Image (cartoon, rainbow, N blue to C red; front, side, top):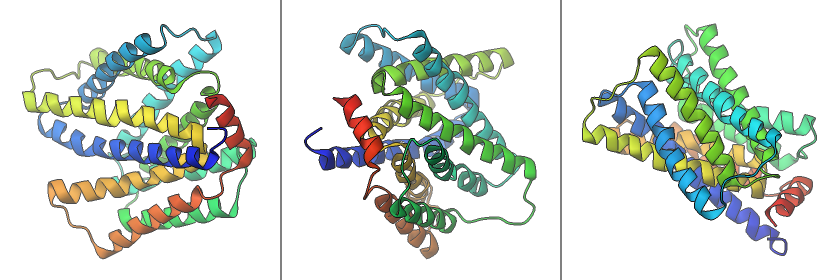
Length: 305
């Protein structure tokens, strides 16, 4: 990697795109699970439980039991048990008060939040390409998702923006902690913490649903493997190669892919405006990674090697 920085960047972009594709299936498969009678708590708990079993098996086989400093353990547990769980809870709660399209757009302001925090804390250097990428991606998202400007509930907006902020913090912490451990170990511990959080909430509130068809169970397995195992591992590996800001901007293609999947699987309509917006989002992601910040790329390459 040290002798081929451009190749490392290209691999990082590909990994984040794979991650984005996997996460794009989450709401699609989740819709099938809900239609099958599964509750939200059940879907989230089963998703992470299956993923945790996979992650721990691979981790123990490849790296043994993680021997990490107590501080690293606490950070990872906080990322999974607090950040990731809180992000999901805030986002899902927001759609009770505002349209899902508006909630999704508000969630995807997190690349802007990541950029601002990273620049202010001197974790990354800002550039003209990153600015253009942010503007183009944001404009494209508006075109793809659309907006309902009338009757907007302020609480719903606050919940969605809170979700975006928590997710931005989660990404930046993930980039920093990867300097002291591997993506596999990080993902394993984060998923374990999230499983315990969702399990505690689901069982304590009595909201678990187990009498489901085999088809519904298979859908939840798909969520665990595609939208969790593959999605989380490839995203963390991508961050190590291209930085938190670029990775977060590229991942804004997720709602675009979700729209395409919805058109194919649910025969939802796709307008010309949405197609053009999707192109803008993709172009914005490409612009964002053309000139990566030298300082953070050097740090990431050092941690990889």
